[in-house]
Image 1 (cartoon, rainbow, N blue to C red):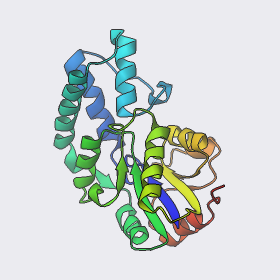
Image 2 (image 1 turned 60 degrees about the horizontal axis):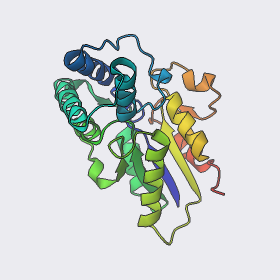
Image 3 (image 1 turned 60 degrees about the vertical axis):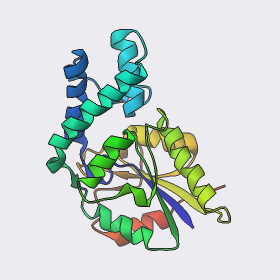
Image 4 (image 1 turned 90 degrees about the vertical axis):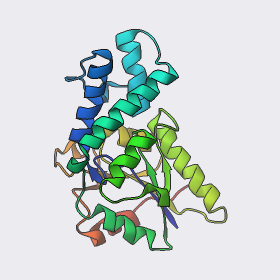
Length: 227
């Protein structure tokens, strides 16, 4: 059995632009902080929780209080609701996930740098229910590699008598690539905008979408066995 883990934004959902706008607008509305020209790659932990903590450290010289984080989440989620019609699945992503889930050869999980509540909202807006799968987010940890690790742990606990022959992560960001290198697991890049940033970073396995499931499946079958 293979363990396949997916990121969400930019990997199964075309949501990055609307999502970024809502996140940036949240900090502008609540704290008058302008994040218009920031590069997320400059942050230590590119997750909603990690970025939020670093924004507070950089701009406000302190860590956020728990209630402040809850207020940020609520405002951000309300903005996302207004943009819900802009979220689309990346071509054929949901049917490909269904194809994998219907097979006894795969366990499926989701590890996102988004918060749990907002990730569920975005997925439900395209008719996808995360409740059917192992799912971890930056509500569980601020570090992306740790979030992926939590999915791996739950998958191993769920299938105690199964030895996963390989573990593979689908992601769209350089931070996704970095996390898989830290964990020593396989990576398939998703580049639906064709910006080539993953190829330029040396990623060999890159897909635009999931419209040719056989080709994507072949990439999965080539994954490196777990040591």
